[in-house]
Image (cartoon, rainbow, N blue to C red):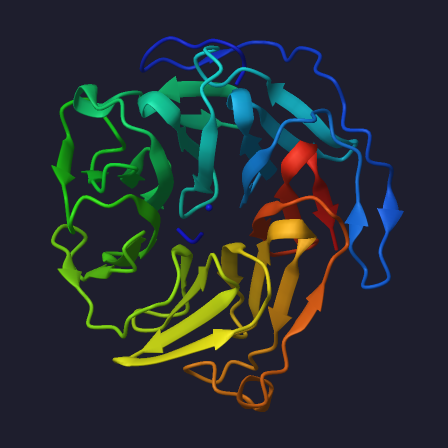
Length: 329
């Protein structure tokens, strides 16, 4: 999602520790006919998110595992989370300048990682909130970031001072339904909950519900194309595109879609159950209205049978999922 340990660390203090061994994924390096390659990874745990920093690409997942993509392939940063307590990590993102990695997950887990020092700084349990964080978005640069955390209790937690203690506000934008995802660009952002309600902010603080049609399924992720255009995916394979109050809903896949990302060109990429990878070109025509879109020319491939949970775009594109699966293209 936009703007997405070393064992132990001291609260509010970075401490570097050495990685430890973890059973490796049994996936062998193999290139699929569409160019996706399954690569070897040092874990068999489910990976929930993947994001890029200036220092490299990181993936996070079950049991607090954090992986880093290096010149020598994927390596283990931690097998048990920032605090070493094994809390699941559900999401990861980076600061605007790409210098820091932020991660969040179960039991109020949230931390900031500095790749240059290989150390985490704890932001755990802001104001003693120990809810399960389902997604995180960061705006601003390293050391001066604004943090947006959403959780399974329908709340959004915001700190404009780099997640420091005592700087958080806590708001319930909707009915209290679990918030699936949040996306931010500057002070403009969107979030979606499991009731299918979408909320927008233009000041980074107050949230208003967006008038939308009724959606037939749970919406699982949201990505911003611009300050007005968003792309969402759902549990039934639906892709929803909204812009300036216009909404289009398409049945693009036959399986649940878990994550969606949009390139600068307007190209839409989504991943989901049973190894589904979905793509459609955009050609930078807002709001993504292209011949490919009008004719519903989605390309769909299944380079793995494992469920995929997240995708990061770049060189290469990277998708992650169950049993430590990592695909690159």
